[in-house]
Image 1 (tube, one colour):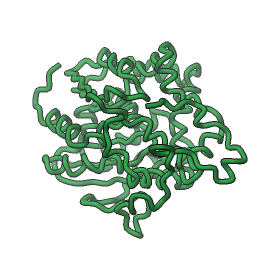
Image 2: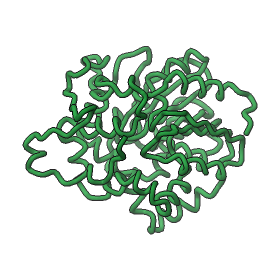
Image 3: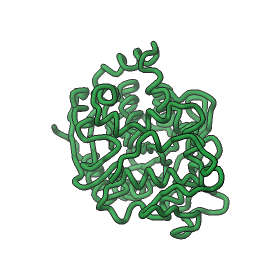
Image 4: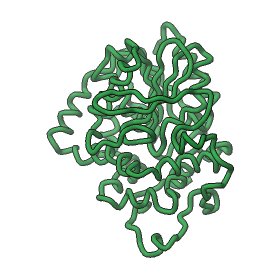
Length: 348
């Protein structure tokens, strides 16, 4: 398995504009839109509102409109996707949670999927207010937040900023924001593994790379970040879904903006203030999940996040999985998640 670096976001040259294929799958294969069959999307739903046992609707929160997919009745579990994906990444957990007696809701973050693409508002504090605003718009007093990758970063943030609205916290494949910051700045191995984030800092070029050749780079990143032993994920159908969603105008730019803020604000007053604010401990029960072979976020980077939690904290490592444990082993991930959510006294 190789770790993508910032060269993956090099400027588009004449060969790229002429249609040069960028590898996105095994043996350099770049799946076309029809590879692996069409995803379960209705004509009206387009690339985002994919058909399934869930229902789609929009909710207003924090001055924007957010698309959600929901199933079931019971205590709210709000699912937050990461990069380069959208709500559909939780397609396995939505029915599993609903069957277990929860109201499962997967939302598209600001600027992604079916949610509004606003010109600003991609700092983590504002994105966390999007999440807590959605909880209120759904008419719920609180929620268990389940976040992967960037969604996990924002789940950590929301638990600190609005603890009364977060009943429990589940984070996958993402360290606490302060731990992420220190790892990226002081751990060369993590800085190298996350070098795609450094590549995002250039203007316009990364956006062009993400959408070139029908968003072939999205497929390549997902392949390279997944564990080597999970043959079921990613398949061509899933890659086609994610590539089409990234190809929606402005999605690439909005997806990158949070990472730009995370780096460019390191020495700015707003970034310093955010880092200080995140010193406040998380005071809700926390489940922290990670793939042992995650090449994008090293296990050592995430493992120290428990020092920021003053509540029951449980760390679980999925052996042999990469950056997407909820898709690489959906049954195992869902079982771990549901058992912990139903545990009335989660211990350390």
